[in-house]
Amino acid sequence: MSNATIPTVTISKADIPNGGMKSYKQDDDSIILITHNEDEFSAFDGKCPHAGADLGEGLRCGNRVVCPWHHGTFDSRDGTLLEPVAMEGLTQYKLTEDDDSLIVDTSSAINKQIKNDQLTDTQTIIVGGGGAGFMTADQLRKTGYGGKITLIIADNTAPYNRPLLSKAFLADQMGEDKLLLGGTEWASNNNIELRLNQVVSEVLPNECSIVMTDNDGNSEQQTADFLVVATGAEPKKPSFAGVDLEGVYTLRSMDDAKTIKAASDGKHVVIVGTGFIGMEAASALIQAGNAASVTIVGRSRRVMGNIVSEAVSNALINLHEEKGVKFVFGAGVETIDDDNGSVSGVTLSDGSTLAADIVILGTGVAPRTDLLNAVNDPDGIQVDGHLRLRDGVYALGDIAKAPTQMGRMRIEHWRVALQHGLVTAAAILNDETVDSLEDRIPFFWTAQYGKSLRYSGHATTPDKGILFGAPNDLDYIEYYFDDEGADTRASAASSLGRDKELIAFSELLRCGHAPTRAQINAGFDIIEQANALLS
Image (cartoon, rainbow, N blue to C red; front, side, top):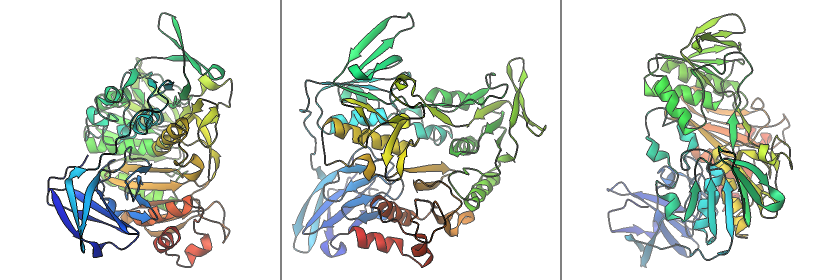
């Protein structure tokens, strides 16, 4: 919702060319975004509803307004949400034209509330309260579903923003209440039955049913018209000795993050794993300032090595070392050492030891596919571009192996989970105006020490790329290719500080016009090309 307190704002029409947009920062810290679409102008709250970015600093590609920070995307004509990670569209203001001027009335928002009058005699059961499950329920209500919605969660907490656990929450920069998706009254405000601490023991896809079993062995079966399974993933525990000691943690849930925050105070922390969870946890603990030391252990000599090139990896290592993080590369963990059931240190495969009071395992996750193993591969549930397993039954989020522009794959990223929820809600409502999954691309970001590295697309390797800028200065964009061919199109890109270029790449990739290696080497202007092709 807008925070504007200045009631009317007058803007010159000449400021905004046809097909363009411009934002206007106000003295009350609000932002107004004006778009020009053929003969019509539209006015919106110009702060992205996800994290408050100035949308005018993003890019407009055709009728798509793309946020510069996390690529939330909105329709330039009416503010409709087209792409997460935002979870709602833009507040639109009433606007009048007076000769060469536009008068925006920020005190009068256009009411876009939709009646919940579709499929009123049906029931939808959603298993799992992560991003995919939440987004399905939320979008169903926002787009007209009037039936019963039951959201079943094994956790003891209403849906929350899981990616922020290893970022702002662990860094003591954000409280628990700020993590709740939709706010504390989301379920009641949307007439959603929220069942916490409930374990689904069986899914019967042929019957569109689930079975829940309590601690006393009592079973309850429920059947729905639509069944959505979004059980997420669980941390992998390595096979070395000591992983079950007191003081060894994984970071996946709110309870995990709370425990790590309390346990790390004044302690020597060893993080096993150099992926983005391990790197974010290190950053957050350093920012919180309570740990005695933070050391990251990795078998490789790179961090996030399956995502970014060696040059970018080195820049991230330098950033962490400047903040006091220590790295131990080229050695795996042999054992987590035991002192009467608690962690006393870590012994590495080269025989060396590290002081450790607690150990955080950032060693990847595995999809929770057990409930659907009878019908599918445990590596991922095969679904179509609308996340359908079969009529009325959907599998989404971390468990779904779904078709994308880059082939069928399972992707464990928050934005993808939200995309799944958006697509599934539209499929249930038979809304063909919403893009299927094949028309979307993956995107993720990692925040470390207030710097946000963003990645769009999916590449098989980061080692066949073309780099522009200086990663050590945290200012670069790098395009990734799956082979060395001159005519091979880039399949992914990562960036720090070059938001518009990454947006332009993402939009070209989405439309099948990603630049080739030869084009980029020839001085390809990616923003100009995106504007030309997508206007």
